[in-house]
Image (cartoon, rainbow, N blue to C red):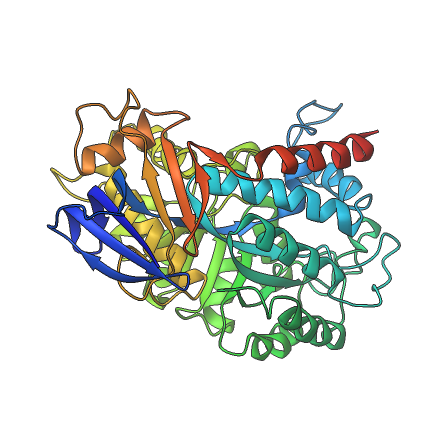
Length: 452
């Protein structure tokens, strides 16, 4: 049993002072505000709950920065994708574990305590299944266990190269499954994460480009009540191709043909009409927003203000992992809306409301829903995922309560996070994960070989 004491902590009911938190068996056993620190309490100043990155492709952390040279033609998501395919085709299971371990270390250092791993790198380099079809998933679980991050594994079903069941691209050969193979993959993936504390599983039909309607209907039951994530309307070309195939836009098609509800998370949903925004919000599904990746790939900007005004729910993801950080994603989400609307504090919701706090609260709730976490936050029964801020950081000086969140998200840059507990285990102290050095060395060795 561990006892922590925080001078100030953000509880589900709001900020509280002099809060004692008791941890036991990886969870929060007790939360008591308004008490003096007791002998043996580990004392900190500012505590927040950890957030989830609800959308990650871990292997892409290894290629971050490798697609920043323009080719002969206009550079787009579709040209970036070719670089990604080449990188993915070279990776071994040990490479994936090395890259994912460093990524998860970095996530924890930046305030993410759970990851939704949208996992589609399944097979060997020639496209044939490994003897254990969940070999790659097992290496993702290995990375999560080593780092301590909470894992929601989302094996991805990917069968086609474009709408209407088109044959897959050769560069996609490591992703491709039949429905029967995917059922076997799901069963093996459940075993792969079975001994990992707090881990759970869902499914991720990759996109309407990659899944036919019949296949989508066949695989949804394999979620067994767990979350269902799908890429939707990320790119204008995707919308145009979907219209040519079905005479409907991707989000419109999903609204009319898929059983969207609170278990679902539509990743990106960037190019949505006002009618789609309203209908999407009514389903209770989560919008999985990845502002840094969406900017990196030139996707566009999700209509976040309109979605929130309609009662929509969102969480944040790190997607391509070109840059990892809670504050970075939330800041860019707000700044993108400021550029779009030419206003300030666009997503705060109402006058006198902290924008940082509004963003944080929405991302906490939306991430928890999207990853099927019934209880999150600094409350009894929740997984003990806690982040402390460095009260001596210049961007936090003299601030209290919501102003601390604003200072962290909009002004602190780096170095504001002090300690992180994940599942009750203190994995980050003084801003450094205990595996940072060894994880970097292993990552560097793998990536040097892959780049060469």
